[in-house]
Image (cartoon, rainbow, N blue to C red; front, side, top):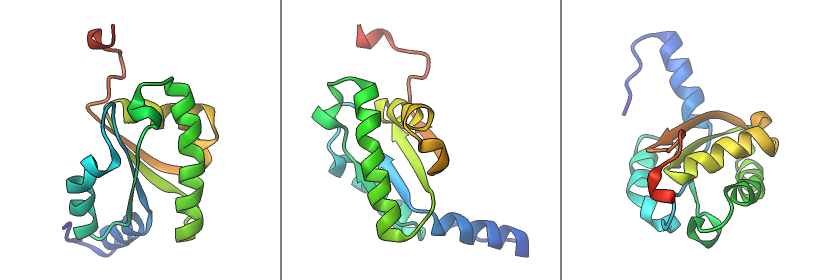
Length: 126
């Protein structure tokens, strides 16, 4: 857990912990595969939800990004938060980025973190 060292860092920490986190799974990764990361974040005080890519990421990234929108909207409605933080693993990072760029996510996402996201492509996808 992060321990704040000053009044301003405490306010920043409190704000971060209030923003729900949506984990966006990668290719071939069911939502429960992110449970270790989700548990760690919950232990640190975050509210966490996991989004599984449609067809485990075997479809079009753009369509997966579109499917992320209603999930984010549900998390926002349930929590009463205006925005969420996205943490995308592998293809999940590409999906999160496309959601922000193409499907109104820029108004609904506070921060986007990519873990092992192939932002510049990969030869494995060939």
